[in-house]
Length: 104
Image (tube, rainbow, N blue to C red; front, side, top):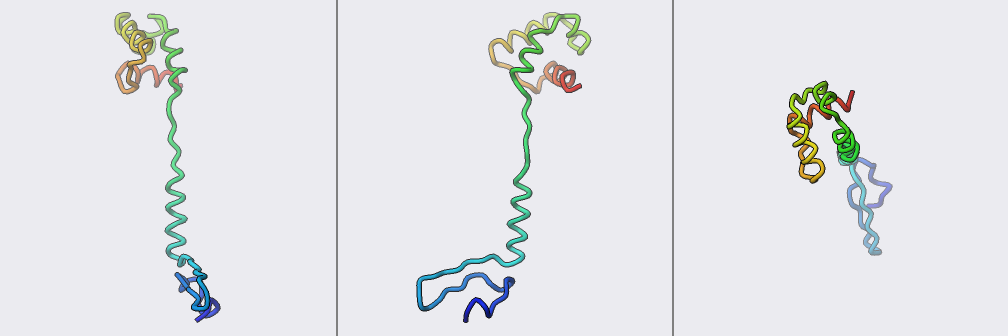
């Protein structure tokens, strides 16, 4: 049996008896599955620019912070202290307000 006897849908693996040549090919359904997997794996994740956020928050005045929704100066102070130390989380209520303001 040679390659010419098989069409692409039937061709999976054909080996020749007169040599060590091995030809591998995918069936149509396997090709489609491989293409779909490739398309699904092209997911792009976006991350916030930490330095930009840091600079924005460190430059906030208490009046600007109140406009964002951070009520108290002490809250702003704690937020700035955490940013300076590098120990902050983007999921806190105050940081969500900052990120929302920055996205506008």
